[in-house]
Image (tube, rainbow, N blue to C red; front, top):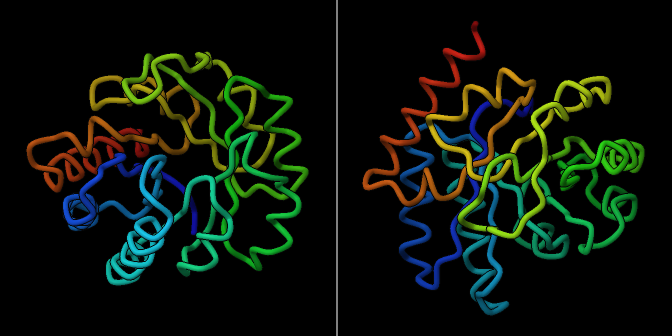
Length: 207
């Protein structure tokens, strides 16, 4: 699939039922790219959540990408995996994914993005583009990176502190996707917030 628009990333919640409820609401609101990201849940809980999210994604014709864990992505039947610099070799992951998506975190580095694409990444992510409540100490990635990275020929994802208010400037800078956690999943009505992002992104993409 062509990666474009809202790239939703699940919040780190201890309550599986609440996590799945919010993820389902996001998909009901139009989310078609969802990354499962859990840094604190036990392995068994993570596996159960990933399997259920993969089922929900298939029901909504959405794409599920697992963060940081190639084995979990394969086990759960996800559509791909997203890896950071500490999460294993991209080329080795590419060899095992057999047509599934491989994404790479490239922080603020064009060189890292170039290397990721050479290793087989289907898309690259830069961030944090703004101050992020999820990762307050994250390195900041200037918006100029997106124009510079267009020549890589893969979709570009922006992450970090993105909201409905600042998403337009990120898209105008050259990002194909905006990755959102807090501004989507902390909303009182997750489905309606997802629909608001959909309207905004359709407007920006057609400009």
